[in-house]
Image (tube, rainbow, N blue to C red):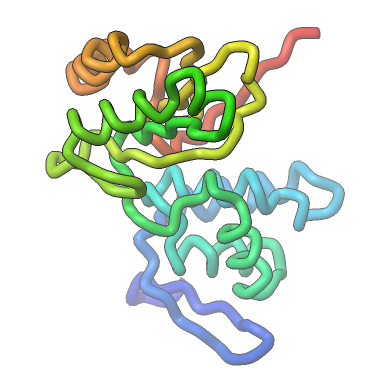
Length: 195
């Protein structure tokens, strides 16, 4: 790391320097994460979550860090980061709300939920409230059709949602009442699975 706080990485096409808001701890965590896999490039998806958790979005600096640690080009990392919708290349709210508007959810109330949330929050697709608390996104099928309509808050599912539930949900998010259940957007969480 250069003394200026910038990361320098070598891309196949050119050498780039990006101003890094990432910490040495983030870099150490990325290196440790890569070491968990027999093929380090397999750590790319969790590493993108890591840099997103550090900066609230996947920035050029985060892409450069992933590329450096995994010995990939920035183009390879950016291709993955832009393919998956869970990696945000723009600021989102502390709580990122995704409303499923695919066919079944839409028919069962997803469109009405979208409209009600958009009107209540005063934002549209991929927009953030003025206070930075909540962002809103239309999302694709969440494979929860038997529980439709559904939405997600920071990728935690809420099933069988009705428009009547929305005021309480928004109030609870803004008041921090759901902080134990829903961590801030971008938080890299370890998941324990019981079989």
